[in-house]
Image (cartoon, rainbow, N blue to C red; front, top):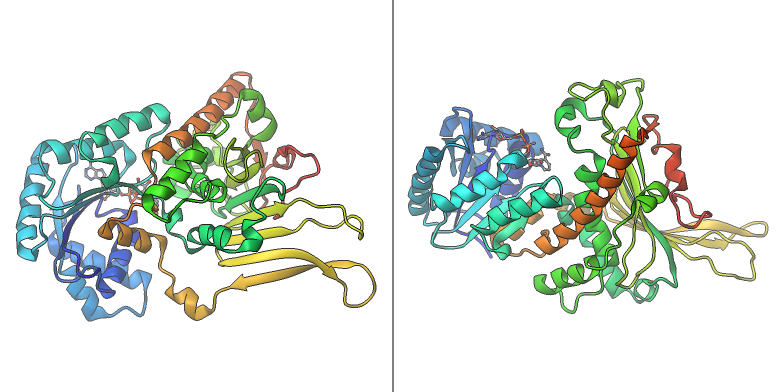
Length: 482
Ligand code: NAD
């Protein structure tokens, strides 16, 4: 598909996400011809910018993301951008926006197709979605709504937001975006699991001992302390990115690779998600806050953070399902700020079996999502000299030429929105289950707060609090990546 006709409205056109991610991703899609002559983008935000000023910002965003960019192409691309100063709470502004969208639709022959991208603070999502509807901003062609994270703060607020959105858009036109679902190695999980007999035949509770998902960030909250203190690692990372990865690891094989079958497989799995009790939370979940380090204040001393805050900058826990190929297998996760490194990896630990060599190390299948993109199988092999065994690594990685071609998650997902493929977006049925799980942990933590139990602390540059080493169901299990 090429030269898709569309008018795209970006709410939050002066924001960080638009600048760093959306404009460069759209430019790459323009260079590839997916959008070409028949598209226009309206950037809206409160600042009184002009069309020209926005175009300058777009070119700057492209130059910052790729120093070898084609200046003429970037200028041509930016000429499709228009700015509308807009306060999302002011109805009159939607009337002006509707008029501009209709004029541009005519000018660019966009065939009444609209994409509404909400790249703004989540508290505005409901307001925008309902005004798109009551001020009739939808076009006569396709109409798709893109919703950034977080979708709600808990199950109740997510349900409320969803109700408002569904008043204006059908579920199939709601694209709840999670850029982890656009990452190369995350997209590789299903083909890796399903098409390789060695892996496929091992993907069950008889063979897999446990799975470990690690998402580390090396920085602290920086200038986002005010927002972060109302969220925490569980809501910020586990509720979306980590659960998406876990779902792909544990879902039954979809009948076909259609969006419908994949979402059905995910739903079948998530309906069997075990919701933790307070006792489970005390035994298998940990929350932590970073201490002061060489280059950072302690979390409780960060700007705009409540000095008595119980908000976690680190969390580790356990997820289990009653159905699916690995029903009953514990899936452990951990994520945090100010950790040893920025990394996203999955370690699949295989059960050790009695053998004539005696005690041997477990085999581990590792998928490194970021920063490198690799699959590593850690096995036992014979030592070359002397007797006994040693650890050996079977490795897959991409050539530099291939790495250079891998699109960013946003580029891939915006492509999917343009062509109307919602496979790699979060369905409401999935999101609902994620929130049930998160709410149960938050409720248990809030009980613990009342009992005077605070989050553990951890040293910056570590892998989190020592107590995270004790969350395993089987006492001989341990974190593979240390
Ligand atoms: P930001 O604060 O940089 O930008 C917010 C935008 O909203 C700005 O353009 C601002 O002018 C506009 N705005 C604020 N109040 C307004 C109002 N009343 N009327 C009209 N416009 C108004 O935020 P961001 O970092 O770009 O994040 C936007 C969304 O994207 C959030 O939901 C965030 O969680 C999500 N997100 C951001 C990133 C990222 O890397 N920045 C990554 C993943 C998800």
